[in-house]
Length: 425
Image 1 (tube, rainbow, N blue to C red):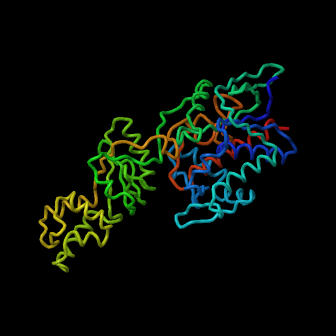
Image 2: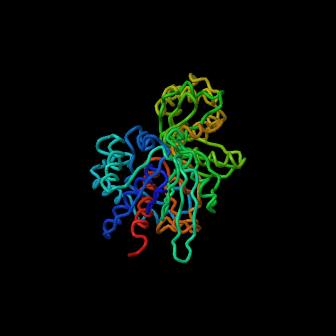
Image 3: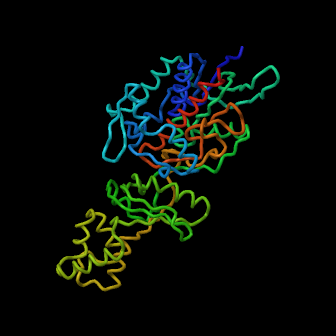
């Protein structure tokens, strides 16, 4: 006999666990007891939670706004308003996981351990009687429409057989970090049910530079910069943050955030360009004036020496080399052409990006099911009644810093609460 549930949640990551908890808690408040099951392909639950934030789990950010996300802004705004960052803090405190603020605005568990977060979520599921079935990868979901005398039902085919459910919440994630179980299967399932899925590509991912670049000589060096992404000569994105030089290219928060824009333009054959301003908040004119004034006040200072006063030594040496100026050249002896070449190098350095580092290193997926295909008040599909879509399956991705976890909690809250009160008593 096929096991039957009131709610089947496909995927037991952050969004799926949240949905299961909120569904059970909501049902309890109205005096009901629902049969809820989470089905996950992994042998152990929560791999992506455990590796996030360097193993500390960046649960959310102290200030969340729709502008921190890419996607349909009006819909994102309504979803975030239903369960904001303050609600997340209160919720985790109720689970026994107090959070702490860091200077960057990121919120982490006081324990500094992602295991604390996962343990609390799993413990709450157990307390509420929410079942979790591991190694139960769902390969298909069939929908049987309601007829006279019977209600609509879903049949889920998984690795070991079938289960039926009155409501299904799809929380399978995207394709980022496939070693944690994200393989894009959920999109195949909802496509067969009538949903569209936009082109998908890695986001929040390091970028590889061409071999002729000097990045290997700067590996391990980190500094604040301003990055601008252009496509066909038009500005797509501009942001400031920390850049990390690596043996393969560039990484760090500012690169991770900018990556989606470069990747998307590259996929569209729009010849993207990533330009770097190594002295943020200083434009061409400011820097040229600084060099000219310094040449007058300190005529014996060399070009190499003056740059090391504002930039790391290794980087200064490389940028002088790129500008084809001997580092021992006195600043006062620079020609106008040399000085302007140096300023251009400092303010508009073009990174020779080869490609991104791929799904294995992407923290999130860009693209997915278009947000207009769901009801933002409940996360219910506008195409298949009783089907709910949450988390990374949707065409919404946030910047680095806890924003994508906030999206998981918020969408899980809305879907869980909606399923927990259905049908109305």
